[in-house]
Length: 299
Image (cartoon, rainbow, N blue to C red; front, side):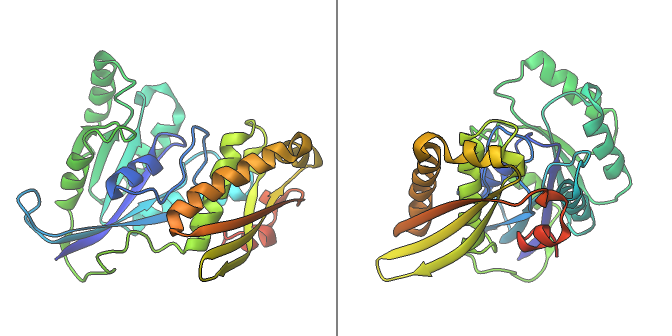
């Protein structure tokens, strides 16, 4: 069997988590249209047995990383360090872009990082469903001229376009090795973590731009019973005004977040779920080493 690890890197909001979910055929990473949705590295396990499409048994562990950006606080530094640290741990790198290299400094910074590592690199130009053919050609040429990518592939992760091409391309850089995980396992992240991420995703979807980045979710109770799973979670925010926004008038916004999260958690767990949410204030938690550790953002 061929096995290995694949890092997925890129600026915030280019579609890294959407690509991971498309590769696995299941949602394990939350996705929204807001930058910096992903905060932790998330591992997705892809196992495929030899057939006419792929001639070898293969297991690849895809590592979805936070978007690489200029950090403004300790949480941002943790996220950027987690993403760049992945470059040293993997057998291949997928670098996702959705614009020209000349469009801004973010991709240039990542290109400089990639140029210094010998790991095989595949460039994925994502969101081709929204990019005109002429613009795609310009993006392609800019990156091709760098001469550092083994392959350049255009995809629409949200529509599933060319995902098979990405999988096949990356598989060529895997080597003979042990099977790391059972073949029916698609992530090593525990259910509690995925549940907290689902709740955070719904917060991101329901709230205005200035609030979500200061929100963290902590699962205080997770009890599996015969016919129901009982979950108590605390939503932490940094300001009293943000707490009011999360709760909403008459508690309507919090109820909407809870209902949407509960329905997705029930689909994930395959059982009824009782979900209870509280909102608490923890000022400046994104710059607190203790808080970051408690919320799982530091080793």
